[in-house]
Length: 390
Image 1 (cartoon, rainbow, N blue to C red):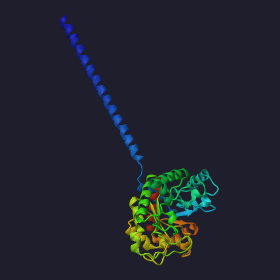
Image 2 (spheres, rainbow, N blue to C red):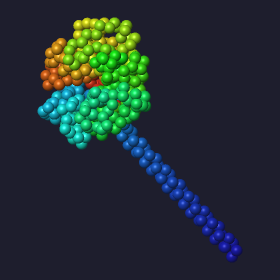
Image 3 (spheres, rainbow, N blue to C red):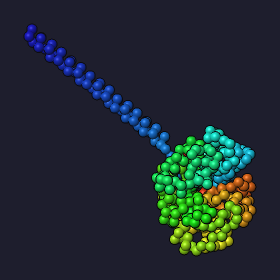
C-alpha cells in the first residue's frame, strides 16, 4: 500500500515538472517572438525615416535642375520689374526667376493687397520666385514711401545716430518680420559704398563712415540678415565713392586700383567674409579695371570679384534701365553681355526681348550652357537657403 502511494506521488511529481517545463518553453517562445516583432517594427520605422530623410541643398538643386528646360533655366536669370500688364502670364511664359517691386506695384494699396499679389505671383510660378523691394531705408524704401509700413524705415545714418549699432540690428529684425508677412525675401541692402562727402549722390544711402566704419556696418548687417533668413545684397561694386548719379548719365570713376583696394573694396571683403548672399555691380566705368565697358557688363570686373575677392555667391547687375547702361548699349544686347561678363542675375524690364536673344546666343555657342548652369545652380541654392524651395 505504501509502495503504491509512493509510486503515485512520484508519477504526479514527474507530470508536474514536465508541465512546468513545457510552459516555460512556451513563455520563452512567446518572448522570443515578441522580441523579433519589436525588432521588425524598429527596422520598419528606421527604413521609413531613411526614406523621409530631408534632401540636402545640393540634392534639391540637382533635382530641380534635372527637371528644367533650357527656357526655364534662362528665365531664372531675371529679377524683373513687375510689368504693368500680363504679370501672371509673363511668369509662366518667361519662367522668371523673380519680381522686383516698384512704387507702381504698391501705390494706393495696403499690406493685404500687396501680400495677395505676391501670393498670386508665387502660385503662377513653377519654380518659387524671388520677390524683392529696395528697402535700404530713408530715401530708398518703397514700402515706406507708399505707407505700407508705419513708421517708415529710417536710413542707416538715422538709425545709428539714435541707437548705435543696436539700432541697425533692430531695424533688420523689424524688416524681417514685415518681409515675412508680405512674402518678400530680398531687400536689396546693405549699401557697401564708402562715402564721407554729404554732397555726393550716394552719401544719404550709406552709413556715412570711412572704410573701417562701413566695413563694420556691412559685416553686422549681413550677419543679422543671415540669422533672420533675409537675402543680403551688398552694392554697388567696385564702390560708388563720391561719384555722380549713374541713374541719369554714364559715370567714369578715375580712381586707381590701388586706391580702390585700400578703401572701397574693404566693405565688400567684410561682407564676403560674413557670408553675404549677393553682390550688385554698378554701371560706372572704372578705367583702372576696364576702361571700355561699364562695370556691370565688364568681364575684368567680374573676374576680380571671383578671383581676387574670392566670392562664390550670386553676382547681379544694377537696374539695366539706368542711363549709365541704357545709353551705352542696346537693351537687347545688354542682357547677353551681362551674362558673358559673369553676372548670374539680371535686373531688367526688357526681359521679353533679352530672354529670346540669350536663348538664341546659347544655340549659336555665344554663351555656354555650362556657364548658364553655374548661374542657375547659384540662384537655386540661394532659393533653397532662403526657404523658398523645399
